[in-house]
Image (cartoon, rainbow, N blue to C red; front, side, top):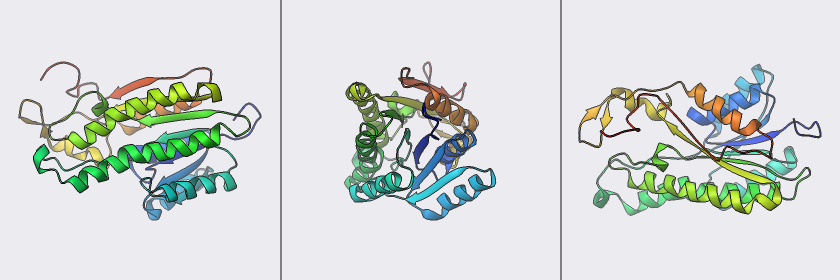
Length: 254
């Protein structure tokens, strides 16, 4: 609840599966009214149905975060159906093909940048405009940065570049949002057990050229972490958090 007793409203992008789905359901369990956004309506509707069985308040809105008009329509729906926005979790993202730089198609590069970077900008831009004018004023923006915001995997230039850029967005929004009571933090996630990470359990390329199986962690730990960030008062902020499978190859050499 907000300070006025109004149920908090959260928007989760990429909410139809994986991390987005887990975080949306966790927030629903804790009393948030959650708007679920994603490209495909059917997976979103499935999450809404699950939420309704749990007594949660969920709204599914198909949205292409790379398209400014689609994002504008999403926020028009939030204004008309929910009246405000307290939390935005910028989670939608995609990988590029795991190929050498010279083999990566320029159109695919642009597609990854449009989804992972421009999509975050468009949603953040719209949320910022709503949060600074609503009553009570302010809100929280949480960006999914990924471990790739710190260190690349082999053959991942598009994904890595966009995730490094998310850190810049996080810092800029944190600074620019101060005068409007808008806070912004980033969660960097390593090897959560989702459909996107299934390949880790089969073996993935390492920096030394080997193929190795990597440990995974339960995605519910990510949902708990995002909820913790969301639940803080606007006078406090988790600026950066890293949550990862303890034994994944990130800290140290090799």
